[in-house]
Length: 283
Length: 317
Image 1 (tube, rainbow over the protein chains, first blue to last red):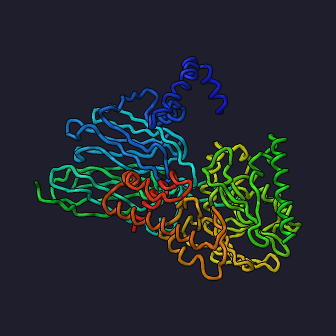
Image 2 (cartoon, one colour):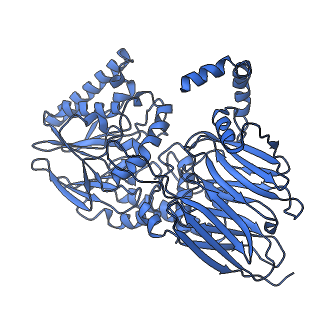
Image 3 (cartoon, rainbow over the protein chains, first blue to last red):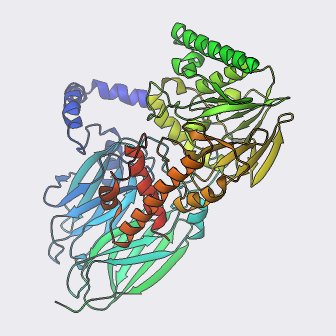
């Protein structure tokens, strides 16, 4: 199947041209750390599945920028940050942000849904990275335009693996949540928060032929954060988000509101918690 | 003594022959050069070690970076760790055969990492007890395919090797006897990994510590930093006279353990401080990614990896 597909591709004149040009391009790109590499084989399939073959993507410059480490030090935990270049206003805002790790077994990390209440739609999180891969951030603005940023990450090497080092600790803590208000928070000013939920976000594996082990996937499917009555962040995810899903995001508090989190996992377990926000007097 | 030296000479000759046949028969998968590139030395009576290189895994060293070896009793032999590849396991098996005619009765895996137990397939045809930590089968099933893919990209003699889980696991402790040579096995709580196993040779007071102790090479954290520091408190009771670390030279272990503890305590304290200040992982890497290097070998990537690993544990304290 793979061979047939590769053979068909090699007859395509555009592919042929690409074969000739890309090695040179590859050499040039290799000199620039963090620039997306040209092999889009995996991405072609992912984009078709997610968006359909016809969807176009605008360059992300000015809308979002994606920051990933040059090398994934720990395959289980690779920090990534997407910084928005536009403010969230009722007229124009980033509606969603989808993260993709091309070469992972489950490449679609998940989608974050934002609202104007965020003030700015920037986010930091951690993903699993199995191999040398492009990582993509795709923003959709409220007018339905898609913008894509991509960066290349080298796999970790060494003994780290995209698996837990201490499953017992992860299971014992499952469902525990933390909210940190970072920096100073004032009414109507954009402030940064960190939300974490302890969960193994376990990718599972098929029955192992030799050990006869079989453990099903067990992962966080959705996280909804609301402030007062308003949803401020929703995440629909999969197994490529790291164990203990962690987000740093922004919000513009309207007053001393309560932030509520609802987490649902793939076994339909529901975890909920609320935190009253601590605000400093307005400056 | 004379006998020991002769045994060592025979082992070295066999390994040299292995190297030569590797040059002559490069296409035969069992005889790739990495198979027999490193010598085996007798570090105590009846205890033989192939010392690993202090290098990252490369195509040239094929992951021969860990200490592996065997202990010879009056009736049989226990092999402790088998290297990264089938070929390295075969070389170790050859080294056993040059030292003694006694059969290999036990095969231990000190933990899940590929540089220690991915040569186990070289012993699959033998009727032996293959022993590991109670968490090892699951850890191998989870990580095996990932490690194999990674190694296959860099290591030519990995092809076709299978990841072999133990046929017996240790919950807490176990005693085995190789014939007037009792060994005490202990499975530890999560420390370097969640699969750490040590082998204590009562006769010589030698502890085969696996990667619970690293000498010279930077320790890599893949389990629990708090757990590891706790295990270090009881790893070397008085009865332990000598230590074969997972990486580095044989010694009485005390100085190596103290050096390693200092590194881990520094890591824990600095990462705790960064978390308290609200620094994220990337900012923490920027702050302490290049400090505390001291004399550690293979430092750069592994230190960064340790910071990430410690961070994701300590943020839940």
